[in-house]
Length: 73
Image 1 (tube, rainbow, N blue to C red):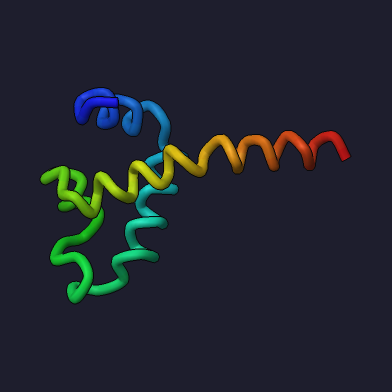
Image 2 (cartoon, rainbow, N blue to C red):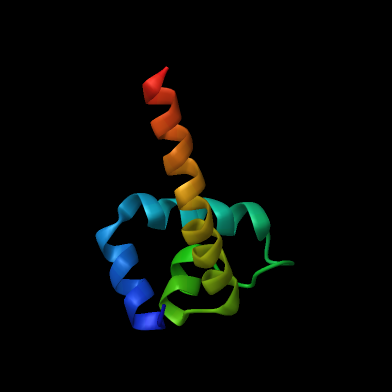
């Protein structure tokens, strides 16, 4: 997925953006790890931001499947 497509996808899916933000802040908890906030990293499309977005995209199917399993119980 290209950078433009990812940006568009995140604007449409606020839960995915929130997940990327949580991942970013958990993996890069201080300026020692990432020099800018999630919002600034998002604007600059830093490598840290792109990695957090990729992680959010990768985990989404896992979380969706789990939620569907819980609804069946």
